[in-house]
Length: 337
Image 1 (cartoon, rainbow, N blue to C red):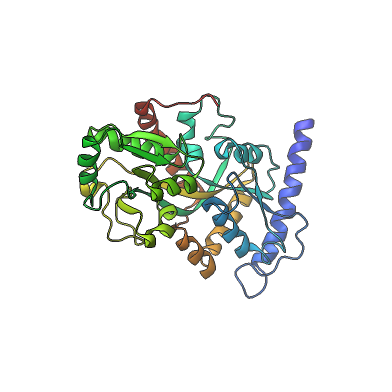
Image 2 (spheres, rainbow, N blue to C red; image 1 turned 135 degrees about the vertical axis):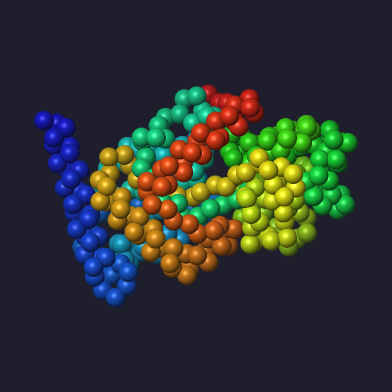
């Protein structure tokens, strides 16, 4: 009886949300119309600090929905445990479409291989809705490395000759850049010490200050600092060059074809969310990415806009989860945190 009541209550909330959303979508001249009957205040959970790329991406989407989906769309920080607290909060949220998560794909593709005590199941505790953007990674060097080092091959030669200085920064232990750097050192046959930081900002500060030789970060983290001339990006980890730094070759172009790392930043819903609600949120995601201010805002982060149907996104995440398993295992890194 209790389960029947819970299902009836969830259906009531979903029906109310869908009714209001349907009225908005069928409404006035815009793609959403204006939703005035919405009683619940939608919120997008973010597991990383305000001002970071995940937070900014969520706020761009919230701005596109504000006044259309609802008068207010909240972006709510649930910071902690490397973003995992926000996933747990989503898992336990009502399945009525009122709570979403903006998250990098690593939470569901890499973390399952890193954390022995992960508090959520990536296959069943979230519903992927759609990516919002692709974000490639880059490998760069600072003033500790001489200007004559212009390619990844040059860096390998430099690092092998100076093993005491050969180190790379990443935004966190267990993050995608950590494992990309580890792949690089193993593929090149060099010893490159990993130095994890608490986020990209302090790592980039040390890189620009000459305290560490190199760093692997999301490409967008590098972009604001390139004009200073104190950071040089030597390679990007996508199959093709980035339009943001078209002069920088890929790892594959430089003889390291197996080193690929493209993060998706995507929207997720709680488990048991009705399929009709998932489809409506997917429609909202697609419309948000037609908004000029959203696309321009993502470009400032070095992100390429991207949408993908929920089932396709789920398959992509499953494929990437299988791909990253042996990469993480080869690194020897795991955590009980």
